[in-house]
Figure 1 (spheres, rainbow, N blue to C red):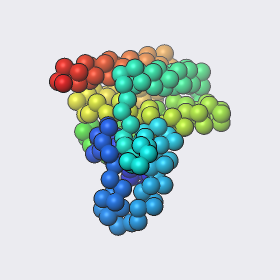
Figure 2: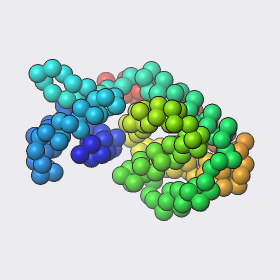
Figure 3: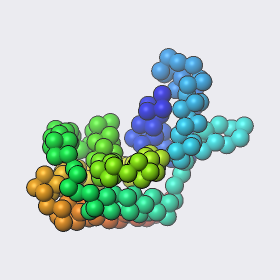
Figure 4: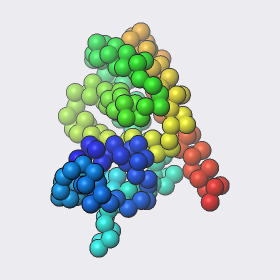
Length: 202
């Protein structure tokens, strides 16, 4: 249930600021309300959901500043690890990831979001630093929040991900790091553009 609810939030099936109907979700998946509430408690700890006393659970709203700071934090982990531990990367895993990206339609978020998460997490797990990896995993849900901007840039993101993987396979550390930095910087610009348009539409 945790993975189902997380996916519903990241794919915007439940919008930011929207109340989460526990009974409706329980009925949809033929389960009791308790597993739904337990999953929502986990998502509250991970920062995707907020609890309002006597009201219920809501998908957390993030400001532009929040999302930029989350993206900056992600960059600190990933760029550092890719640059320092590049030689440890498992090329077989990277080749498989590249092929999965190539075979997946850019707007199929149910497949693209997990691929996105796996690619970015790989940048950190190569460190083999259990403390660093644990901290990264604790924020992993938040690192996918760029998907709140929808799939308008999904085709661009797919190409950027494949560029990163391509340069890793070519064993070009400098170009791989540059491609990762470019991608994360572009995500920041996407966040700004999304929030600017959201403000203009009000």
